[in-house]
Length: 124
Image (cartoon, rainbow, N blue to C red; front, side, top):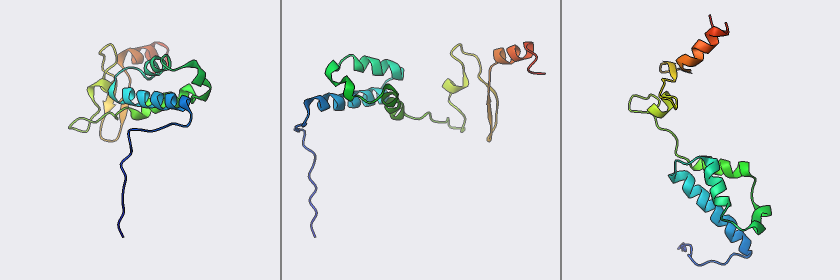
């Protein structure tokens, strides 16, 4: 028995023209989510400004669109020693954010947080 597979055509007709805007919107947020370091909300609201207001009632919720962007982001890879990458090991201010790390456990905190807990007598 012979099976024929047809490649998808670049030419298509969408039954509802507004649906085409939805497809473009989803494709745009997926591609920017996968290739950009922008925040998910920045991508979403930037793309939402380009669509016609007539289709806003057909849009998924903002939370669903933000989740779509986050799902397209590549996962952080461990380094060659199996440790977290530097971006997760430091705060935005460049402080170390790992108090303890071994093969089975990682404790995240910075020295400033520990000193605040000590001042509040929550840490002995």
